[in-house]
Image (cartoon, rainbow, N blue to C red; front, side, top):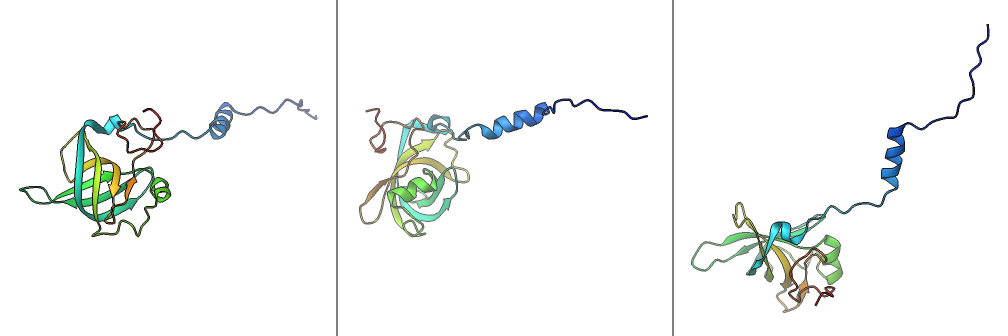
Length: 154
């Protein structure tokens, strides 16, 4: 006895179809808003020496030692934009070597715990030669402080 199979249409399982749709969708940016972590009402001015720079996505982190008036030096972690943002404004691995004296204008984190280090969102960095560069992330809801040259909300 010979059994014949009917030629049924091939069906794509539902999970595979969903997977294909997800792959075809534009990528979502995993990024937090400024207000989620930093306080627009707590500006900081930091003067100190770079101890290291982490060139990692989605943000660079500039680590620096800041002399506190009347107290021991404090470690600060300053969040900057993406590595590409810093490279576009002229900051590279040679610009912020450990020991480089910089001035950072920014905003302190909401937690203010300073454990293991104080954290801030950096808006601009002034280099030893006096050059001032924007290092923040554009479009994150940070205050209109004039630091972001692409901010058209003035």
